[in-house]
Image (tube, rainbow, N blue to C red; front, top):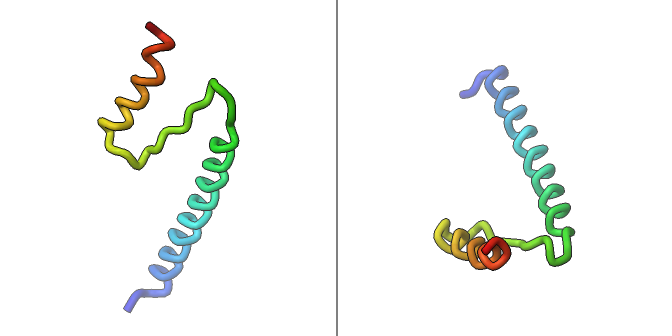
Length: 64
């Protein structure tokens, strides 16, 4: 059985996680609101290779 102190520490961790998750959702909404040709949204759930390829396809025509 967890001690009261340990239980309190666990609650603090959960509170911080919730606050962090809430914060990250807000940040995501802000970034998703950016529109226009200077902003590109890339799905970060793809593999590193797919993300790299997508970035190259977007950036190379601009810099070359």
